Image (cartoon, rainbow, N blue to C red; front, top):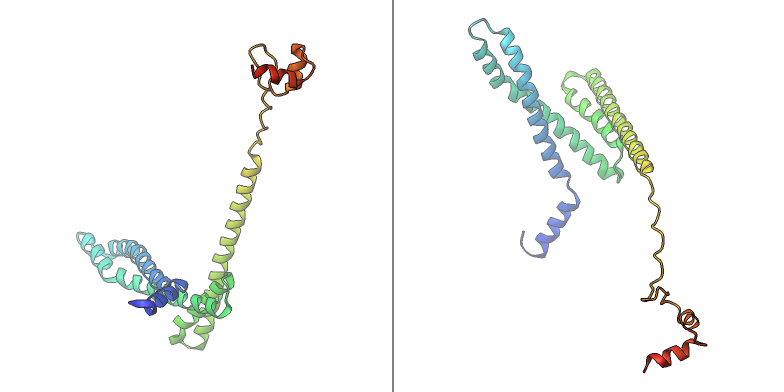
Amino acid sequence: FVGSKGAHCVAEMDQQPCPYKIIDDMGGAFAMGCFGGGIWHLVRGWRNSPKGARVAGAISSVRLRAPATGGAFAIWGGSFCTFDCMFIHLRKKEDPWNAIMAGACTGGVLASRAGTKAIIGGALVGGFLLGMIEGVGLMANRFFSAQQMKQVGAIPQHKPPPPLPPPTNIFGMPTDDPRRISGDLGFDDAAELEADDRF
């Protein structure tokens, strides 16, 4: 971008991070699907291969099927994040209901090829799963917040140190009150003491 128009576009993109969020979630879901699917297909390939070819069978199973699992995860993550951003934009607020509705919409859309019953079932399952996840997250946040408050309340409150004694001269008499000094030295008032100090 060049000039004020480019700066304005950059500012708008900074205020609306949902496009970047969608891409980031898709990448994270793909990596998670590849990793988890790779472990799953590695075990399955090892068990389903004949003796003497289990290593090759496990590697071949991972190479052929792990990317497909990662792609399925990426599609689910991208669809969910797209619906989540859409509900945030429409409702103008962020709360657990956005994730629950996004999960229901994602489950319904991904099951749309199987018919109406599958759409309803997928939507119910998606909404239920996201509701459980959001509920567990809220409970965990409240639990950790309560633990932090208890830890803060258990910290002992230190008492302030006692005040320092007033400064004294070489004779051990305080120097903060001229009238007290003059009385201790035999002067009638502080004026005489100050007059003598000038000589």
